[in-house]
Image 1 (cartoon, rainbow, N blue to C red):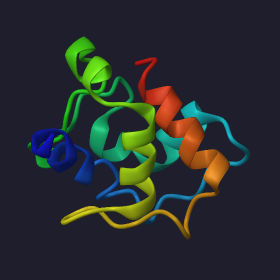
Image 2: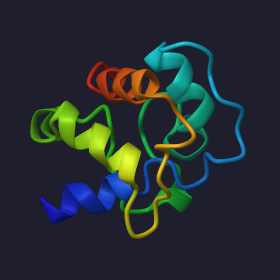
Image 3: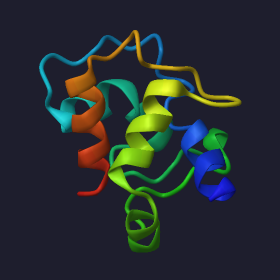
Length: 101
């Protein structure tokens, strides 16, 4: 669990300066806010060491959508909170999208 949380902490580290995606399209939010660190395919960039590969089946089975939503909203040690930067719908959409990679 702590490994999962640590990995999710990095989820949006480098994404604050990217413009927000419109609407609740999880793929658009991911590409605008997350792909800069985590790649379009969900494989983290070298500087995002420790982040999970979102296209890994074991990670997808181990991380609940609710856990992902919480991490995005609240942030963590290295990850900023996105509660005031994304709408609740965008947070839910990007969390669901991660499960499709």
